[in-house]
Length: 133
Length: 391
Image (cartoon, rainbow over all chains, first blue to last red; front, side, top):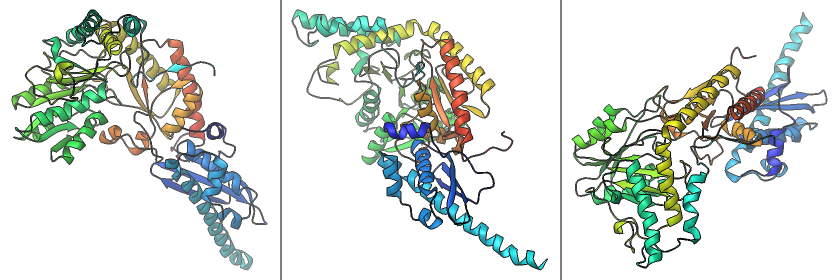
C-alpha cells in the first residue's frame, strides 16, 4: 500500500514536535485528522524552524514532515507559495485517496503564516502605547 | 526485525497440521471429480460426504444434506440473504438485519433494496448488542427474513441469537445468522438455537481459505445460487473443491472438539494482555460488551493516537493487528460498527482490534505490550490532540 520511501519517513520524521514560544501556529482538520504546524521566524522574515504535530495516518505524518522541510529557511511569501504538487513530489508515491493529507498539511502551513502576521500586528499595535508610557 | 507476533486471527488463521494432513491426499492421490461415477469419483465423493457429515455433526444439523459447501463466508452470506429473500418473496419483501453486520450481509441487503425490497437495519447499544425490542418493533406482516450475526467481527460481542430466532419463528419469519466469528468460540447448535440458515467459514478456524458453507434447514425455501450443475443438490453447481472441503470439514470438527481447551487458553492470553496493557499504558478504552463477548477479540482505543499510524508502526516491529475494518480512504474512515455503537469519533479513530490465536505465548504478549507502550507514547508525543493532565 505504501512505498518504502514513505514508510521510512513515517517511522523517522525529522520535523515532528512542537516549538515552545513559536511565532506562528496553524491548525487544520480533515475528518478525524488534526495537524498543527509551528514556525519560528527570524528578523529577515525567514522561517528558521518548522515543526509539526499530527493526529493522523501515515500520509498525513509524512505530508506534514515534507511541508516543514519545504518551508524551512524560506521567506514567508515563499512558504505560502508551496503547492500540493511539490509536497507530493517530495513524498514519492502517495495513494490518490490519501491526497487530502497533503491538503491539510498545506492548510496548516498557510494558517501558521497567517497566525504569525496576526501576532505581529498585535505586537505593533501595542508598541506606541509602550512609547507613551 | 526482532520477532513476529500475529494478533489478527479474526482476519484469518494458519492451516493447522491436522487439517493440512486431511487435505494433502486430495491434491494428487484422490483427485477424482466427486461427481464422476467411477472409482476415482466415488473416492472423492466419500471425502466430500465425510466433510459434510463432520460439519453437520459439529453444528447438530438434523441431516448432512442441509450443509451446502460454498467458497466461504461472503458467498454464503450473499446467498442466504438474496436466496432466501427471493425464494420467499410471495410472502413479503421486508427484511430485518442489524447495522453492524458484515458487508457480505449489508451489501446483499442494499442490492435487494435496489430490487424493491425494504430492509430495516436495527441499531445496537454501546456494547454492540442488538436490542431485541427493536427487532420486535421492526417486524411487519410482510417480513420474511431476519439476519443477525452471532458474533461481531470487530468487537466480539455475542448476540442473543437463540432469543431472536425464537421471536422470528413466533411470527413465521425465517432466521439466518452469520456465525463466521462464532464457530469454535461459542457453542453452535442449530436445532437448539432454532436457526434456519447459518453461514460458517473455514479460514478463521485453522482451515483453508476459500471454503465455507451455508446450512439451510430442510424445508426452508432458498433460490439456487449457481446453475448448470447438479452439485450441492442443484443449488450451487460447479465441480467441488475437494481438498478445501476436506480441510474445511476437518477444521470444523477440530474447532468444536477442541473448543473448550482453546477457549481456556485464549481467555488466559486475553486477560494477561488486558491486565498488562492497562498497567503499562494510560488512556486506553476497551470497546465491546464487558462480558457477553468472545475471548479471541479485544478492541482497544488508544486516546490521541491514530489507528493507521499505530497499526503501521506495530507492523514495522513485526506485530500484526487490524483496524477492524477495511480502511480505504484517507480520512481515517470511521469503523461503521464503532460508530453504530455510539463510540465517540476520537475513540473510534484510535481503535485497534487484537485477535488472539491458539499459538500465542506469554512472551509474545510481553513483547507486544512492551512495543505498544513504546509506539503509543511516541505517537502521543507528536499528536496534535492533547489531554488535560497528561504529562
